Amino acid sequence: MDLTIQALLSFAPILLAAILLIGLRLPAKKAMPAVYFLTAVLVFTVWRVDFARIIASTIQGLFITFDILWIIFGAILLLNTLKHSGGV
Image: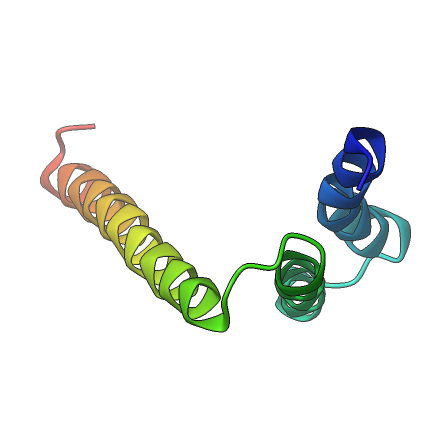
């Protein structure tokens, strides 16, 4: 497959996210599963990645998400603690 076509196909999930979120003003709760599904289908069909690797990458992404949310939760907790104690 031509490198230009692969580049355009790899840009398709980003374009779909922009269309759904900005163009159609769908909430991320509805748009992101569609983007994930498109990405998984493209990875499985175009780049021929095994299904096990797709699932493993999904689980790894969930763990990274939880790490980031844990940091954000701690920052909000610290900010609220400082507000209530008069530090801010």
